[in-house]
Amino acid sequence: MHITVIGSGYVGTTLSACLAALGHEVTAIDIDTEIVETINRGRSPVSEPGLDELVATHSGDRLRATTDYGAVEESDVTFLAIGTPSYADGRIDLGGITSAAEALGESLAEIDADDRPLIAVKSTITPPGISEVRSALEAGLGDGEVELATNPEFLREGSAVSDFQQPDKLVFGTDSAWATERLQELYEPLAADVPTIETDPETAMMIKYANNAFLATKISLVNDLGNICKEFGLDAYEVMDAIGLDDRISERFLRSGVGWGGSCFPKDVDALIAAARGEKYTPRILEAAVDVNDRQPKRLLDLLDEHVDVADKRIAVLGLSFKPRTDDVRNSRAIPVITGLLERGARVVGYDPVATESMRERIPEIEYADSAAEALDGAAGAVVVTDWEEFASLDSEFEAMAEPIVVDGRRIVEPTDELTYEGLTW
Figure (cartoon, rainbow, N blue to C red):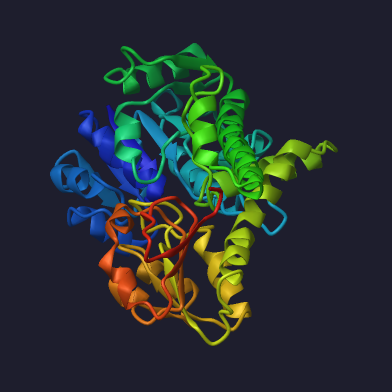
């Protein structure tokens, strides 16, 4: 099939490269010429394991990039994969996706109605927002008809390629059998043993929000229970290992720590809360999940305060990305940790295997190290915020600290007799 993907950020690039790997002819459309040139040179514009290899393999063959919306003329399915950032009150900003939808509609106006592609929203937008995207599409079109479907993504940063290639479900939100059949044809190479949910566009997108809200709430509940375990002098991980044996609970997402971040959980939970409040409903459990998550970085710093007065002391922050295997620092728990340390007067030095430059753009006023050993050298304390695998092998590096004090927010550092070690929930 001929596919166009409008938007070449994290989701759009992953989608484009993975669809090309399935054998489709894919054109990625983006207004950023640098991104377009990067893809056409065979490189991914975002850091994601396995994505560079896919782009390199298929660029110039089944994958190309352009700034020209005219590419939709040959398309069977056109995806909208535009970012939807949040306003301060949690509502999502639909400006980018509605602008893209209107521009897409203008391009579709040049195509005979019977030859127009199916338009599928891959961006995460609340169910009420779908009508706004549809209206923008129709405004650009002027007259005639085009079908708008939703096909939410369930990708995790750090494993997005494998998540696409081995999905736990496919969700098609359509208003016609024709649209459903077209999505079925598109995903046919993946669909043999994968549950497929066929529903309306609004319900499909609600599935996406409910999925992320549930997982975020589960993590916050585990963190709350972990905090209780810490107060009782118990190991939360031993407790969670036991309850994870209950098949109603499962062992996944039971690792307590400094909280969740990234582009999905915080934005999606906040957007769902804001949308619910817009309907005069107060989602108290979701609000509590956010509150618990927001408190975890402070608890990490409170534990550090018990061991060292950080004022004018060198303090190492190990891990800057919101999770390992990505350079994404959006809503990283390192941000409130660094902010809290600066408020206490600490001299902060941060280290991350891949996310240093991303964090430097956001917080330029702290020192950044090129290695964990450099960050720890002379430090009066260290906090672990991201569970990068290399932190598990740290040992002699701690000997160079002025005071070997480590507060671990991810249970990744191995405690030793030489370390003053505190776990956040154990």
